[in-house]
Length: 263
Length: 331
Ligand SMILES: [Fe+2]
Ligand SMILES: [Fe+2]
Image (tube, rainbow over all chains, first blue to last red; front, side):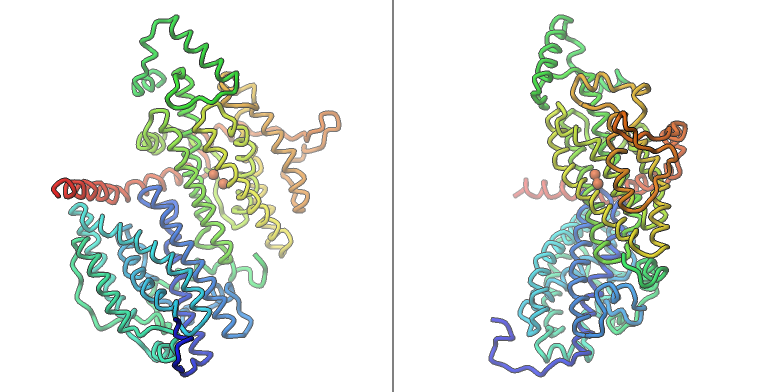
């Protein structure tokens, strides 16, 4: 039974809060998909070119559905492409983790495991959200995400429990990227409102399930979980690292150089 | 190189008495003449095997190198839908490379050996992929013309005498024709768009037209392999026949788009009922083939760096698999 059917009434989530919440999810999938696209043709093996392309395609597909939905909530005539191509970085609300550079293949895999495990918990929860559109999108996304995590955790285990070199490389990437996980579970006003409205999960609950899953993967990979750091970037509030601007300047180039035409 | 190849394959037919060999060859050719498929376990002449290895591995390498010029636009595709179409296309090309490597492996060469040959410059790939993709219209043009030319070349290969190659081609051709339509559709969008978009489309066509015609290989008079390959039913049409088919099919498409093919000599010939076209710059073809094309170095450098940067990953995967096997054995 979904939360919508449950005999409990939730306070409404305001239009602008719902819009921003959906954008956070959309932009996170979009920017990660964009990053993974950089690998296609350059991966360590042909199978990995194909595997990474698959995940990238799924994520951009999710982003398209979410952006379209965000556009409908906003009701200001912006479609998926206007939202993707004509916003500046302050208006992008993706998690800072996903805009981090690909680095070597191991670094990409670490980033992917951290976010896949988060998205898996999130999408599973959203299947029972009070927001019908999010329920529908999550129902499709959760299957994809399960595959993504199988792929990324499979690689993290291989690399962590592989050679000394591969172990050292992925441990270093894990240490580097860990600080960005803080944002995944630090609820701000919009998260709290979305949670109260039954639209979104309570982030602290997500955190404990994510933690269990991550610990399991890290232990199989013989990697050490880094210590949490309190400071974090807050991409979801539009506060980005320097990398996002470069991603956007590349991604948005044609739409900016030749405005108002159809592609 | 020929005998080296044979040694590497440990071909036993070198040791057979002459009469026995002649008998085997006659039976082999009879099978081909009867349109039966040759399968990996069947006896085949060493030269047939080598011709196929050369052709299939070149084809596989072309798919893989071909991911690069188009991959160049994944990050900049102008809509999310176009981005998805492009990623899926480049992914398909990688998939084609994978099937083709597998088909070649049935002939007794490993993927590692083939990749090694590509990276060392010993093996060739289609020279079309040594041209650059400076604009978004190049993506449409590649789909329209390059995948279009590939289809012309490959449809007859679906009936190739070697079973695994023929079967791989059936699947690949379906996807290539999908790519061709998507490319044409992209061009159509540009051609009904702004003057900048039309200019992009025309410039891209100018860049790709002649190299696309070169994709069919040297003219029949200068083609070394044609006759034998025809007898073996590895090839069913000559280079010039296929090139003519391609021109005949493409001229009306360009007209439909409102684009001009960059060839003053192009005209309909009432007698032959084909289009006449200008002469191809074979010097350019030879130059690009010899490594002096605009992007030869970049393409191979990109493959080499992907291979080298990935070495630690592939090694780790092997070591991990060995550890797992050891653990399983201990249990
Ligand atoms: Fe292909
Ligand atoms: Fe293709």
